[in-house]
Length: 151
Image (cartoon, rainbow, N blue to C red; front, side, top):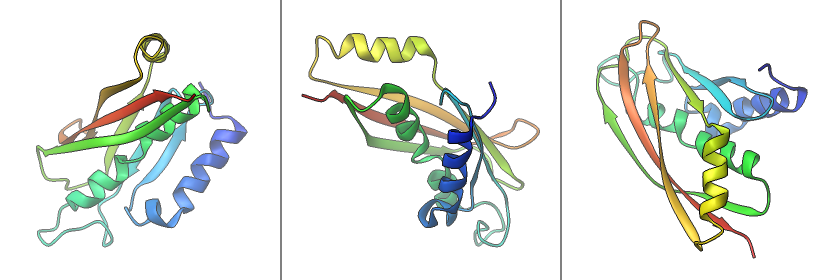
């Protein structure tokens, strides 16, 4: 699915928002229905650490807000969606541009809505990999997202 005018504007806004911009990452794609987001994180002077690889803080900062924003957009205003916890495992040094793809299926949204019919709140864990062009995984990030129905 291609980007819509609205998701393209959101992508531009994200990429110019100072807090996200300083991570060094850029959102490269947001599907029109928000089910997929792609980012890239280049190795350059703003993301390079002391040993010449991508700084771990840039890796985490690049992926930090994405799942929460995707789920807010897809579930709508009748749900509270919040980041609750995160962990990152560094697997290999980032020696070139890293990429990540975030995907959420309709079945996941249906499961969240269904479970919140019988529960007050819910936590789910989402995983994303940062990898280079060859597919070498440099970092695995797990985000725990908290859900609650308003009212």
